[in-house]
Length: 247
Image 1 (tube, one colour):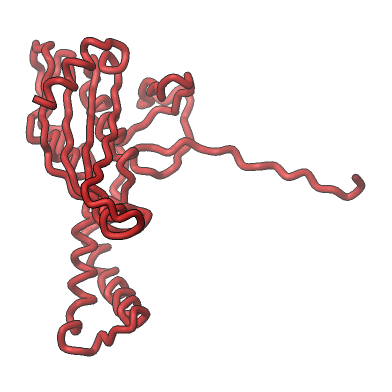
Image 2: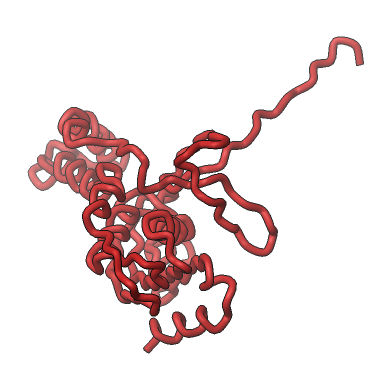
């Protein structure tokens, strides 16, 4: 057709562990091996989550606090409340500082906690830390989801300080999240830091967006898992991990 224009759709870029897009740099010396996404055979570009830049600082918190508090005042008015009444006078500031704490994972990177906690050790048996408490915020409704994280890995000449596994969970959970992405971020961060033979991560959580609204199912739980390396390839290894976290 004369005069018709051909639309060219922009090429989609893969998201890294922080949920932001980045171009893959071919031949980059820091590029890591591709992570298998499963049965589809499709792979994603290297994910350098523990080398990412923090996207918020303490100075950002101080600078943005007044505008964040003002936004909460606007929300209260839109809900039919009076931000000037006694019980709500300080609520916008309290809510603003609380939200900054709930999302403090944006102020931290994995390298902040892992650089001095990786140790050479000739140990090749499974390491498991289970029942790690997790609190996060659903990015769809800005309400909490709460649960437990179970992590296992097979060392490859290096081990990680046990408390650091919980710190990894804390960094990624204290961001606006979906549970599926959170599970994968934790597994990939451990893989990139240690290059173990395999990693398994399972999260069990209750979502307030299901409990308090929508279908309002009080006892529902969401379970997600990510298996990398031998945890994906070897059914016996995977079964051992799953059995141990249930015991």
